Length: 493
Ligand code: AMP
Ligand code: MG
Image 1 (cartoon, rainbow, N blue to C red):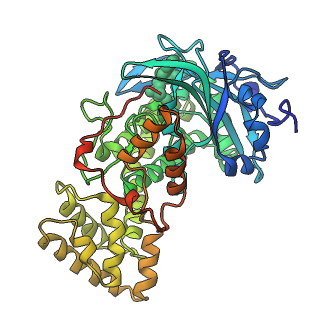
Image 2: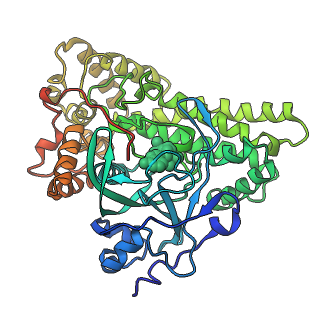
Image 3: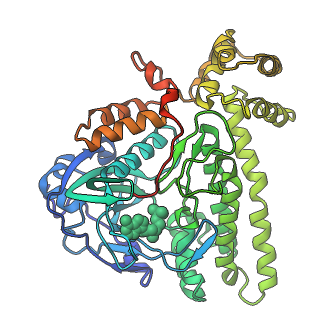
């Protein structure tokens, strides 16, 4: 297969959403080279990995040589950043190359990040460094392996340039990522803020057809679009919370309507359970702290609702607000359901019983403020379910409270019947053993920046099967040594 036709891009966004983008090309870079390629993902997408890895493939993945007849583009969007509305953000360092239809018939965006300046770059250089590119690669693939809806990493490309950031000078790089789309709450806000409700309608129709085809013929489809996005966000954030994931920059421009995790800038996994956990250097007030994520998703949903009001009830704003508010308010109950489902599964509970929420809240009350490793705690609970409480108890200095809770939990478990072993096995299938621990991630990225990619590749392999205990990987289950100190992340991809 030649490089010209390897992708066979479709371009529904470009053809149907005139005005929502600027046609653009990647910057010319001296030495594009594919340094990491996701072979399983390439196969799912029906792409020829050998062609992608070639010199021509690298130029294409750097956005320099768009295939004939295709229109790479920079998408326009607005967004609330840390609560402040910015009417124009847009792809300042990204390009949508086109859409791919995978072997199962699903449509995916192929987007490049770090491919140079665009009309939306404002003061930025349009570039990305190798560290943040590999960070996104690793984190998004780890999330995928954990079963969380997410953008995927297809390839990391180095450019042969240097990229300067306040905290570093690194090799320049580009990530080629795949998403079910890049339509954000901020995409809706872009024209809504300009009062162009017919453009918002166009986007809503496109979004419904692409992501919620069941709603295409519904008379109340704009209201139901809001409900459908709500349901996906509630499920997504409940999943994040269940694995200790802190996104770090839940701005409305980083919230997709398809409900995938997107924009792995300052994200990280929590070590010790603490609702106040923040890693991002710019999140000084903890707006996007671990424990705030469910409420922030609802706040973002309310911003989407505002953009849809003129469509929901064109001649009666009061009624539109009433209807939309009902949808947004329902988020809390739906989120709670999704969260309880996730935590029940973590605890090996198959049935839903009235006392579960109390039992679960009691557990988090015991964990709060004790700096107990979140991931290890849940993973070790399966030992307790098998009859050995020691691994769990070792995580606590004071054992009294957790013993009391385990008594109640085990009684509740036994009440369900079934055999303990298969219940414990089911727990191990939802409580990961291997997560991207900050010290491991940082060590892998530091080595990569020094030209040694092996630690990164090894970590990627470990994280590809997060639930399955394997020999020789014990070190990846351990907390950072005290010497690692507190961890700070940066947005500067
Ligand atoms: P993010 O924090 O990654 O979600 O980005 C927020 C906005 O800043 C988006 O519009 C980005 O395109 C833009 N941006 C971030 N970094 C750069 C950069 N190095 N050059 C140009 N634009 C950037
Ligand atoms: Mg972003």
